[in-house]
Image (cartoon, rainbow, N blue to C red; front, side, top):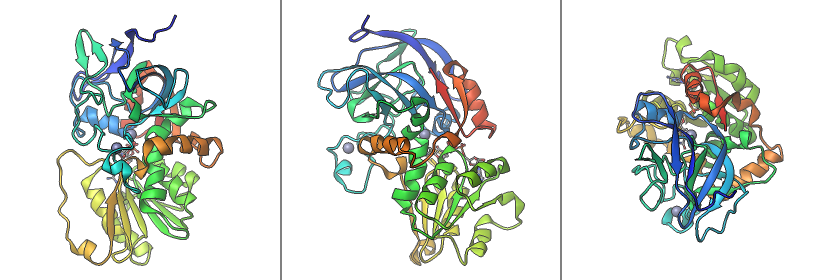
Amino acid sequence: MSTAGKVIKCKAAVLWEPHKPFSIEDIEVAPPKAHEVRIKMVATGVCRSDDHVVSGSMVSPFPVIVGHEGAGIVESVGEGVTSVKPGDKVIPLFSPQCGKCRVCKHPESNFCTKNDLKKPQGTLLDGTSRFTCKEKPIHNFLGTSTFSQYTVVDEIAVAKIDDASPLEKVCLIGCGFTTGYGSAVKVAKVTPGSTCAVFGLGGVGLSVIIGCKTAGAARIIAVDINKDKFAKAKQLGATECINPQDYNKPIEEVLQEMTDGGVDFSFEVIGRLDTMNSALVSCHAACGVSVIVGVPPNAKTLPVNPMLLLLGRTWKGAIFGGFKSKDAVPKLVADFMAKKFPLEPLITHVLPFEKINEGFDLLRAGKSIRTVLTF
Ligand code: PAD
Ligand code: ZN
Ligand code: ZN
């Protein structure tokens, strides 16, 4: 029997307040309104940004259903939806692409003004959410909320992908892989023969390494305080792995000495102010480019000596690897299907959705790269 037009009762992982475990609840998901799409989730990755909401380091209204790295199948669509139809395989886009705003029309930029990241409302574009639990409205997260058996997204925040794609793998294209890969190939524009340093070897940092290698970097220096991450980094293309705790001087000095004054491209993929500074200083003073990928703690600032930039360094950052999401995601899925890059090495654990708290424990303990939760 079709569920279109009806309220769907299903399970979701609700965060009632910060610093608490996820609670699997029975929720109601209202039908999609005009220009909205209801999706049956099939798989979702566990990203550190979701954990930033639990820890309070990323701001979101509560109660909330987080999750933003998912893949699923369209269950029904609201009036006026033309880009997807029921039965299509799709990836929700936490960084949308309206196609009409100043940023969407800019040839290089991608952070569409319709995003819910800069000033989070915890709603869809119309200012409301489709979720209720125990008669209370539950907030959305980044317009995606993938930790639910069903979710509703705006049409500008969903991309149709290849019918043959394995959703339990390509879900990583919804965040971690694309963010890291794009930071190297699109934001930094890593050049053949160059030297790169990647700070932080989680799912996103390892994807930066995949991007640096694809772009033809000659040296890729991986930096992490957890040496258990080094084997995977080498497998994916790192040429050297270093642990800042093994040196009695700042890691930026170590990197400058290793690379004749500094690397060509450095990436901070942790989300800490001290490592953002180290990454900046470790790229060459005259010709280095440093990219911020990690999400910094809410409302924290970093004092910077302008001399660090005056001599010619470039310091930049981007959301979602600088990709215009609705255009890029179907192409990246096609590239994965054509074996242009791997996703499998990033997936260390697969768990049933109900074990979501276990998935987050693995991330916090540094034991997983990506855990994929399946529905
Ligand atoms: P993760 O927690 O899996 O990886 C972080 C890595 O950093 C781990 O391997 C840690 O051991 C390592 N680390 C921690 N502290 C240090 C330190 N002081 N020095 C060196 N290494 C350290 O996270 P992830 O890969 O899922 O995400 C990484 C960051 O990227 C995180 O801040 C997340 O919020 C952000 C992110 N940004 C975007 C975006 O669009 N810009 C998208 C997705 C994730
Ligand atoms: Zn993410
Ligand atoms: Zn836009």
